[in-house]
Image (cartoon, rainbow, N blue to C red; front, side):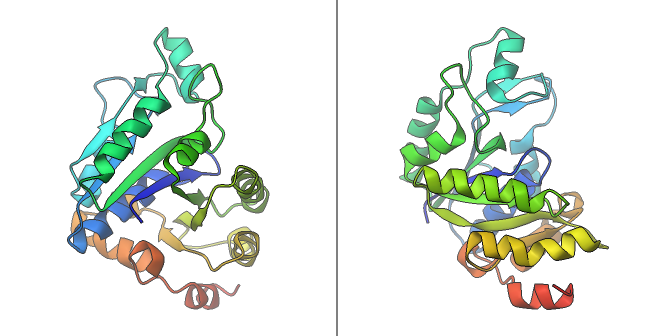
Length: 238
């Protein structure tokens, strides 16, 4: 795996924490890694963004934010509201290809969901993944809408011929309720494979060393960790 695109079933599902976890595991195994965030929305220019959070949590410092817009909107709408030029995903693809020549792993963190628009022509992170021929890791939130939102995202991936790297729960609650527990089997059924990971809620508040361990325990072997999906299901009664 050299390029991995991280998307989600929506905003606030834990994409940045999962991105940082991937970067932390790469660093732990001695692999050079880079992180690209094509568009940061909802933050003023002087505020720390998602790439700053990745640096703080993982220690990986080869990071790029290609555009920032203050409105808490999808990238195209946020650029339009700011009277600014939208992010070019063609430029983003060129940067990722360049980084992939010198890094074992390049993680691209999308904004919002798979089909959020980045420009007025309707370019999405799905288009970016296809241009890069990259696998897509889908981050989900284990709530009442998890199955529906995940099914829609996975159907969109399949329709576009994109390769699924797995489904990861970005914020597993300390005290999961019935909706979270019941979603586990359904998520695996939709993905047609075991869950690729589940990071604990609050992982983004940990220090770097504790976060590295949470990443190792919370991501599966294909992503560089030791997460055991069968054991996780058993512990949570799924």
